[in-house]
Image (cartoon, one colour):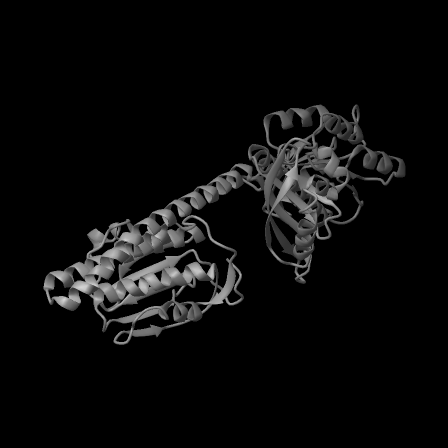
Length: 478
């Protein structure tokens, strides 16, 4: 046998001269092929015991056990090694039996001519096909092992949802029914969907079939006593022509998350009612104090009265911002696509920016809760005015990678040691600030699932970057 080769062939033939000739010709024909030889089936089995063999090339007419006998014994042992029957005479009965026994190919050895080009092509083709099959089987085993280890339902449907190509065992836990039922009737999972949600789910399925990626939350009745919440994410996979070939995705149980969200909403509602009551109780004596202060200032001119007036005004601001913090801090209303420039313009309407300059560098569509996003931007603008002065230049724009937006100013900036603390409630370095403005910004950003970071702008001022927004020209979240 030649040195190291990619494909190891075992050639079996009781004719020693022909054995050597074919082996040499095969190795000469393609240097990827190395040939081992055996003059009988028994000798061939011994060779396979001691050496790796990628393909068996065997004569049929041999004393004792024939090539067909050898093929049958190999296949009976569950061995799928490529087997090419290479015989001098064509025999329809032998050819038919060899096909039934699982032969890879059947080649007649002509008396005249060199068969090595044909044999080399068939050997290499058979071996590559078998290796590809093994790779696919290994990959399939790995994927199935991974699928069985996750709590999520992994699935693949045809483009019209009429055929189920794959589903893992987690379906039984999440939907409360055996996988055999959905395999026999792929759309039967709809039977478990809450009646009030079936139309929404069906409409979402149609959108995916049309090529749209969809995420949907809906209720599932696992039993008469138990109702669960499920989130499904569906991804259409297209072919070379851009048409939907199949639909893949996953479904997961989000019941605990939905219950947590519900309890959080209830908690926030209680907090808002409590804060409103406290604010009302505080404003009554505050109004009395403010009114009496005005009367006193009409009769007396004193810097102490001016100081008291500023203190009362700050108390009023504190009450407003405490109410804002208490209102739905961890939740947002439905998102809508809004132009970033429009959000910034709206946020500046409630601020006195007569001496300040507001520049909007770029704009794209943001999918957000418009009211709360405007509120966050308003607080960022106010922060610049409070800390950089009324003549500050504020710039708002879209980040270069379009992952979010920024607001920056040309003021003194925020020292690196203070950048983590600025979002804490009550933290302020301004004589006029309440310390709640940036805390509100952080809360609104978190409620959207975004992230905010403070850094230094090109002019040394404060720069706030909000990322994870998922900006794109169509207004769909990335």
